[in-house]
Every structure is written in structure tokens, then in C-alpha cells.
Image (cartoon, rainbow, N blue to C red; front, side, top):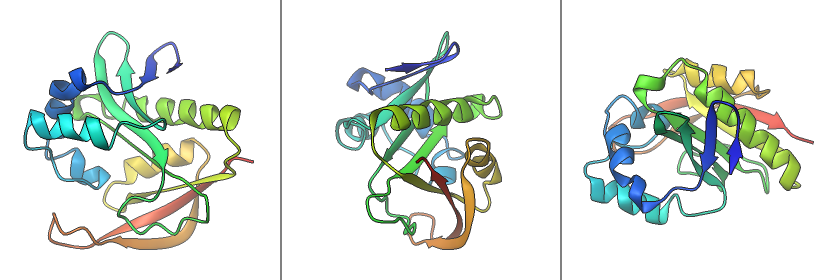
Length: 172
């Protein structure tokens, strides 16, 4: 676990499925991060069992409020980011009632510190949809720099391609 005065990053538990569904079924949350809204508690439970069960994905817990989002780093997602060899992709989201409170910035800084202290990873790559500039501001506050590259989301669940602004953080 990783912790600041305000937040805690901890593993996901199956018992988190209902709160995950509450936040991830919001049509304003998932699409901003690149995934379709969840349709059921069981779908959320399955995401916890499969996607979230690894050593580099954490629940973002706001002390006094509970689970409010997720953060991770790892192998490429389905978004075609131009990652270098052995360069993980960083990603995060937070529930809509907690937007614009600095939670993602705090969580991303905490995760970056963890990566620096526990791994030999040299850089991270990430990106944000150009129609979600707030996510890019989080990355830039944490030291990510725009690469000048743009890639296209080719997922079909929204029925259109969306440009992604690519950023990179040099860790070492």
C-alpha cells in the first residue's frame, strides 16, 4: 500500500465491486479514460478479478470517503500509444464527484514515487483524449512532457476514432 495524508493506494478486492460499478457505470467517467461504462455489478466484479488483479493496479481510496478511482501502470492497452520497449503505460481515473480536487495528481505522484523506489523502469508513457485536457494537466503537473505525437483510439464502442495526445515521463 502507498499512502499520503489524504489518499491510500491499495489492491482491489472483490468486495469493491458495488462501489466500482457505481462510479464506472457513469457515462461521463469511462469514455474519458477509454473504456465503456460498466453495465452491471457482475461486470465490475469480473474487471476486478481479471484486469485489476496484478501488482501494478490500485484502488484510489480517499480517506473518509472510500474507493473513488483507480490507477495503474503496465503493458500496452488497446490505445496504440507509441511505447518504447519495456516502457509501461500509466493510467488513472477518478469518479465524477471527485473531479478537480487534485486526487489524480496526488495518486499519480504517489505511484511515480513507488516506481522510482521499487523498479528500474526508465520512463512511462501516457496519453489523454484531446477532448479531456484535465487529464493532460494531471500528467504535466507530475512531470510528463508532451512528445508531440498524437495517436488515434481505434476502439469501436463509441463508434468513432478519437485523437490521443501522447506524453512521456523520464524517471531515470
